[in-house]
Image (cartoon, rainbow, N blue to C red; front, side):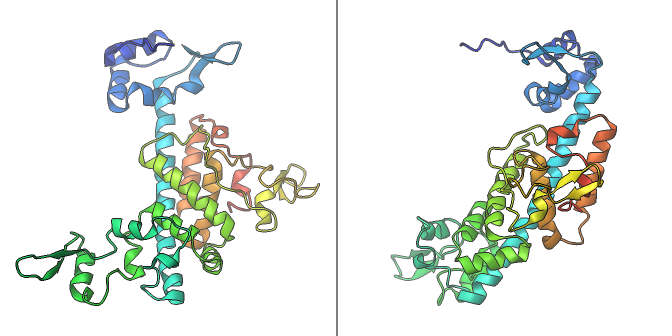
Length: 335
C-alpha cells in the first residue's frame, strides 16, 4: 500500500485534531505540536480515541477528550523516563565499582588486558583499543623517537605520560570509567562464574537474574535517552523474573481474604505469573527497586516513583497500562 498522507502545517494538524473531537484552544494545541510534534503527541492520544467494533482505533476522539488530559499523560511518561534514568545511572556506577574492585583483587589491575582473559569474547582486545584503554605510539621518522599520541582525555593522558614507559594499558579501576554501558555488561557477562556470582551478591540477586536485568535495563536506558514511550509499551527485551529458588517473593500473589501478598496456595506455579507483567514498565520499576535496595539504600527514588504514580492516578491516568498490579505498593519486592 502506498503512503499518501500529505504534509500539513502546524495549523492544519491542529485543525485535524479539533475536527476529530479533541477539546482544546487552537493556539495552545498549535504550540504543543510545535514543541513535541504530531507523531510523538499522538501516542498519548490513544486512550482518548474512539475504537470501532473490531477494536481498531479510529481518528475520532471520545467525548470529553481534552488536550490537557493528553498533555498530562505526556508529562507523566516523561517523569517515568527521568526516574528510570536516575535509577539506571546509580546501578551502572555501582556495577563499574564492583567490577573493578572484584576483578583487580583477583587478577591485579592489568590482568584484564590480555586476549586470554575473555577467550570467548571475539574482538575483545580490539574493543579495548577502540575505547582508548591502550596507549598509541607515533614514530618520528626524522629523530627516530617514539611518542605517545594524546587521547584528549585528561586522566588517560596523565597516566600514560607518567607510566607509559612500563604499561600499555590503563589499570582496570581507571579503565571502567571508559567503558560504555554495553562494554560494561559484556565484561560482566564474560566474567568467570565465581567473579560473576560475587558481583551479583553485591547487588543482592543471583547472577542469572542480574545478567538478564542488565541487558533489559540497557534497552530501557536507550529508549529513555531517545525519549521513547515508557507508559503503555511492551518491551521485547524484558527482565527475567527470578525463580522461587532464587527469590520466592517475586512469585507472591495478592490474597483478598488476607489483604496481603502471600505465597501461592497451589505451589509456586510459573515464575512471574502472579502480579507483574514482565514485558511492561512495571517490571522494570520493580527490578530497579530491588537493585537500589543494595545500590543506594538511602535514596528517595522509591518515594519519588510513588509520588509520580499517585499524581498520575489523581489525574485519571490509567496505571494498568504500566503493568502494575493492584496493591503494588505493598508487594514484598517493592516495600
